[in-house]
Image (cartoon, one colour):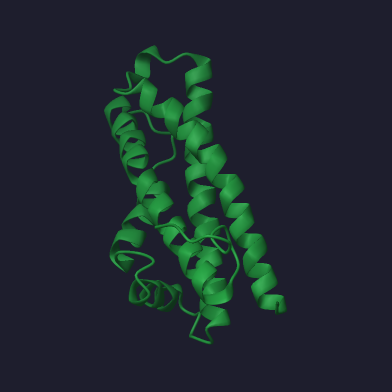
Length: 160
């Protein structure tokens, strides 16, 4: 295993751990919908805050892992749009535009300072709807790394 594929294997493992935490938060948030912002308990506010951070961190780590694949494949890794286009070519993501929409979504609002409760509820609802797509992309990346580099979750027995 090269140093780059070893790094890639560690990034994939980190993504799997992060997914566990994001799944936990996502499950709790979906149980809270529809969100009535004015009636949230402090614990529910904490759940929403954790979900937002975990979503953001997961997408960030997924992007870093995709960049590591691009580097291993000796493709252009700058600007990040080049990474997204290569991931689209490999069918790991559906489209660079969808990735960017999700990135913009997570950066669109700061819940600590937003006062429009309808906008906050819509924001968290959109994050919750976008989460499964991140998981699909992570799985696609895992499959690619398993098949191409024999690293990742599926190296022993690929899914059918």
